[in-house]
Length: 279
Image (cartoon, rainbow, N blue to C red; front, side):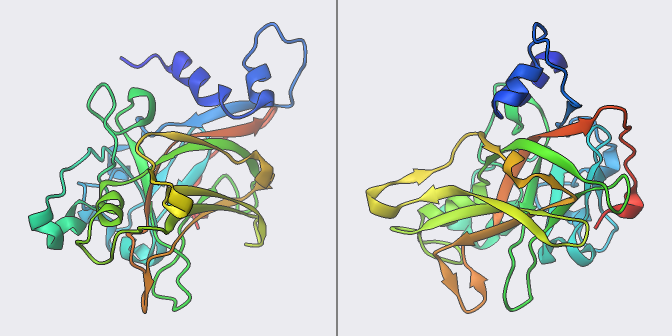
């Protein structure tokens, strides 16, 4: 059984001094907020993708809603291929070179296995996988997660964890599939904070792979990303970018795994997730 109190400590302590102090019971400072963590092991069954392909993510009204933070998301136009963020037990899968044409059928598999054999951060079973990017041609979109309490609710996201998917790693490190190895290029995720009107408040960019200047980095574990610099936001857009591009945009599969989202909740307020306000 997962010790949720211990898990909460690990989830929060890495995202800056304010969080670390707020977890210290000996501190006399009173903060006007507390931290809530979205870990995705306690979602309703219908909020999980049906498999590592995600058969139920296409035209079936899929969505997820986290009761701890108020965050929620659904695929763009109810079609995951247009952009979306899915929750599930996306166990690592072997992508064989002789089966490259079918790699997409395991698109959600996470390139990490914890001590319990699951993909989640700190031995949890479930996590998120985001797909999509802001394609200038308009064929694909960068998905987003939104604070759903009201259509104007804003909160601070202190941070979250990311890692790669099997599909993206296989594409970046072989000459099979739809693109080419990144060689001297890079692949990154961009977290973009939006206000309730959809205006950008700020962004944080993180490499998922970087082969520039002799480096050969491909993220293969859960890495913390601090996001408090975005300030109070209504939605978090997740965009992808990379150097391997063609006529239709990115060739590198535009996926990133996400877990353990730490959110500040104002004291004296309640978290009241509302499906109707998912954007």
